[in-house]
Image (cartoon, rainbow, N blue to C red; front, side, top):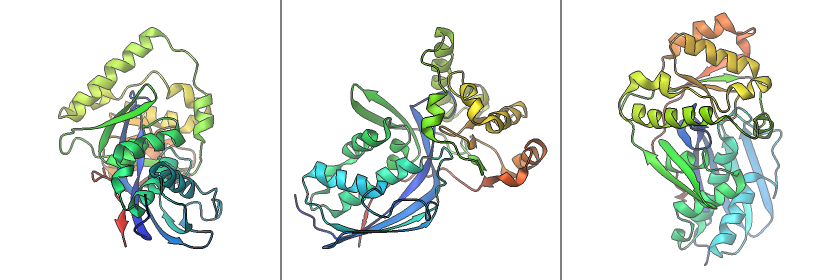
Length: 304
């Protein structure tokens, strides 16, 4: 396998996983995106970051995009090169919006764009390699495929399918706190086992959510109920979980976005939510309402 193209760019979206009951399986892509470009060189590794993480991310081989790109080249049997990576990051870090999945998918797609035979890194290969990095495909799948995605593990193999959703059912709004929470910390808060009745409850709600997205928005509130992870994570993000509860009491289908602490409202108008945030949270200036929409196009590398 040879490298054919030396200048590649890609745009990858933020994602929100779980959507309430679909723990580690349901996710959607948002039009809040990172833009990345790479140039293959004969030298070492140079990384330039603007925006999120500009002062904290590694500037060499340890950068996640670089690691994923090199893994992609290795998978395809292509030679390694020097790299000049430029990242313009808009996806907030540590907020439950899939920033690490976006970086991983970006690196793999940049590797695909460099190859003379890009089919060596097709979508299935990218999904499996991204899952190696992430441990689960629920963010990587929508970052790659766009739209709303159902993902699962078939043994050690990651699988994903896009879900059909009726136009207008999803009008997402993200409530973004200043505070952060690591995915590792959020997962440590979960119990090892759950009651059978709670597992059955979430299985039913996950199926109902697929139905609601297909064209029955009146059921979004019931369909987005959860008993497996959100309340259990409340000690790590008490204000987020309580804000979610307040929004739901007011009739808005709110869920914790991924591992949190951002809150995703599946369908709402920004103007409806702002007064509730101001009335509830101790410091409204510590939260902002992000302008987002569902991003439905797949991520793909662009040559040149």
